[in-house]
Length: 401
Image 1 (cartoon, one colour):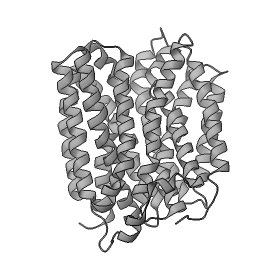
Image 2 (cartoon, rainbow, N blue to C red; image 1 turned 180 degrees about the vertical axis):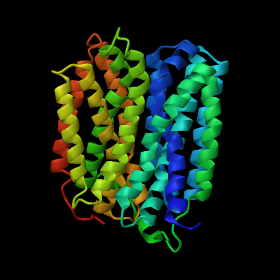
Image 3 (cartoon, rainbow, N blue to C red; image 1 turned 180 degrees about the horizontal axis):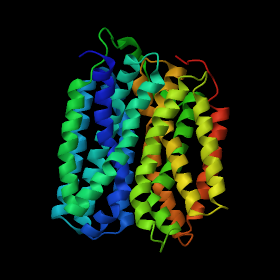
């Protein structure tokens, strides 16, 4: 029973395949808005809050994860499933402003906390078990987070069509509780590993934000997520815009999200595995930013449906790869001691991007008469900025600790 697959890889996948369904938001956000009688924009803040509390809970839960992964995995399981069940019951019994506030609470705050703690919990354990292939290890786990969308999207569509939106949340809430609880029971660090109390007690989070390398990693990580959310959370709207009135539209709306979700998952395992073979793991981010900038740059003048689909695929590859490569990159710069705390601090960038990414797209559309090209062009500029930061601030190959 004590091997790296049963004690690290499988529980990590069970946890991440559950919490990763947060990226299915575009599948049901319009249904929620219609059911409770509120605008899609106002309901959209539930997703923003979920990502915000994901990042912030990860930032503040690093100490808990370092000292007790079983406690953190259980907290994640409870918070995530309570958030899912609470959202379903709110949709079933409430409408209007009350329903909106409760959805913010359950889906945004409570589920968001479960997301952040659950996301962080398996990562160090994986790197300890797979010490010679840390990129592959984190890629396996974080691939589950991306793959969750591909698996859950058709299931959610089926449950919504067969039953209704509230039943979907309630049924999946119980399913994910079982998956995460099994992951919680299986997860275990290698025998003989003892956390360094001296390093843990002397760690000061504020010092990380005075470190140029860490600030550079934080900024490029933030920009990659921000740009990804600008585009990924509007996948369905991009397709409606480019294929309006065409018979193929409904097929694309059902197929493309699963394809892009698969790209997201492949980016997580592919880029992280490749990073194990490179001398400097920042090279992966250079590849991500260049590829995404090029495809976004092409998508503006060549405004065709096929180009937009390719753009969404490339962006999803880079979006997922940025997440899975981060833990091993931080290890290469700062070492394994306190890695959960350092990783958690870096994930605060995800929290801020959760507030700015999809909401910036909404602002752009409102002020450009729904011209989606402005979203793509803005992402193009920001990917170039991220590349410059990667090349200038995150360039040292030496471990800082």
